[in-house]
Image 1: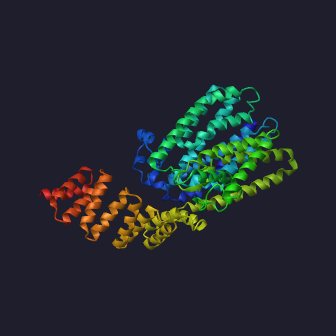
Image 2: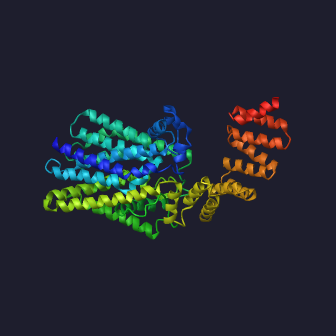
Image 3: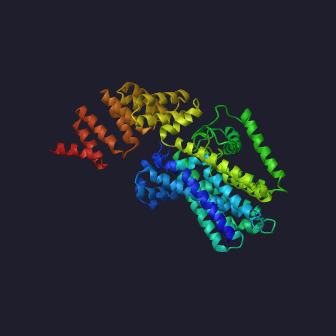
Length: 561
């Protein structure tokens, strides 16, 4: 009981320190990367609608628990970003608390080395809570799914360990329930059934005890849930168009990126500098590129080294197996988006590495009592350095301009998405010339970027350069023939140039592609008025009114009088 009190105190200190480090995030705003879809342009979070949460695909994802948590925040804070950041910080601090408990629980010499177990938990929790690679998952409101899923993921593992150590079948049920909630928060938790088997192997040593068949049968409900979640995740990505086809990113290009991810993330966890919100895919890709060969060789070397230690140190192979398995859903074999890597992908996989480091620290300190003060100093220095780096990284996520400026600073010649998103942010802030400059740079890097052409056209229209705007919108539509907003804005530009025939054609195209979009009918009616076609104008006004456009009602009332 005394040992448990010590680890609870240590875990609480870790959670409190983590929360203090993330206090600067409370002054951050939303960013224009997924936050519009999840929060400030999402009318559905204005109510706790269970049916919507369990049926909606938002930003290419199906995760009802995350959506409900965002809706709950909105019910308390409205659209004040402080509240959303506060919730993320609280959950992350709780995760640091749970990480400390998990490190303490998994320490294999806990009964005979109580001090080592507490130091293991303290170190694991501090590394998890304070590491700057986790800032993206916490300081980005849209990554609520990361912190929420990890909370239930770790909780499920803790309940399972209690069950495996004979604490009753209720713990098994709680583990399964927590796993379900983890999947409902983010499907990346699908790896948990294999993680539980790894824990059975080490440190629980249930395979050696003759429980192999039992441990596999116990995981069947977990695997069934994981399979269903994986199928739903792939369906959501496919229907939203987020999955890259093999034509756009061939399999032989994905394989080396997948191998490089393992070494890349270990490097970033060990040397957490130059963290970027966006890591672009390499310009030269292929299985025979030098960087690809090095990546495959490094993966092989680490794997062989871990296997060599199997007979003497099971902890190393268990740590590496956990790391590889939990990274598997996000290493790029199933390519989602155009990034090569992302800091947020380390959130759950890093846990085993941190526990291993914590375990080694605890074991060393308990065996070398004279070196205890040196260990304490080293831990304080490491946690101080990580805290400082995290606070700096939190500032990167302050707003859209600071966010994308960081990506551009690190990858100035290969970040068209960063230039586009910063250009959009500049435009929304009224800095039109800077917006046009960034969007032009994005087009220069990637000429087939329809979104960049579209947004540069908005800047040209704001300046009254309608001819230039139309040229960009023509290109955006050529690249994406169903680009509804591009048709609508090109119609507006044509109308401003008194080319009413072209404007009418584009507005009609908008109504074909999006029949329930009332503003298009209103704009079409106004153009018909300019051309003197009153009957067609009245018909469009009536349609706009039917679709809830209040401005159309005024025109209809005036016409009736």
